[in-house]
Image (cartoon, rainbow, N blue to C red):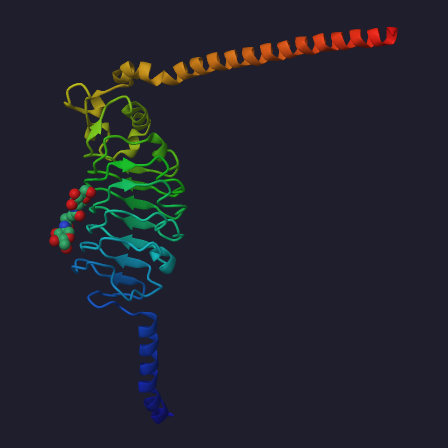
Length: 291
Ligand SMILES: *[C@@H]1O[C@H](CO)[C@@H](O)[C@H](O)[C@H]1NC(C)=O
Ligand SMILES: *[C@@H]1O[C@H](CO)[C@@H](O)[C@H](O)[C@H]1NC(C)=O
């Protein structure tokens, strides 16, 4: 019995090591501390390492020079739960890249060079709980439908970007949001900001810095003002601007009334014309009957 085990031991060791390496190719210059983690932080990488095991769940890629994520990346690594790309050189996200993930819970794209977050960037990543997009100094546009589908998102970081304004429609789909970081952006308190201001006032408990920690520049002289010093009345001058819709409704209803009047008179005219013709036809019939 004993010699048999002695003989089997190296064989079993060989077998298990081949199975392990088959299932877990650790990319060179990365560490794989456990079966589902690949850690390549601060390795001077200029592109994604390879080969990354397909069953990776935690992928740590921060402090590198990675400029792009291939659009099929999350199709391939569909078990990814935690993706850290902080402090890389990403300047754009190809549409659809992040929209295919069903398990991703944590995504860090902070300290990159992103310029905009387009509609539908995250598709229906319903599992996502924390999204970090701060410290992208050129990030100046978040489209209205950028965060559609992120129904589980609890924390959204957009601090220290280049945002002068933000469409409230981008925040409205985030029904689970608890924490929103917006400080350190060059907000401008013009009339476009009025709606965001109302939203922030109602959701101030979600701002870690409160309204005090947010500043905006006034359109008149560019002076900086803490949001906590402003009230909805500060945007009173925007009433004229906001009632633009009212003006449009008035103009539009005016147009509709005219259109209805034109159609009605056309209809009446046709009726009259029709009756006249009927009358004439009746007369001819009578004349023919007389003959
Ligand atoms: C960002 O990554 C670079 C390259 O690894 C590193 O030198 C730098 O210290 C990192 N910056 C921060 C803020 O961690
Ligand atoms: C970041 O983007 C800006 C504007 O798009 C560009 O001028 C700058 O060179 C970029 N920086 C890096 C490090 O890629």
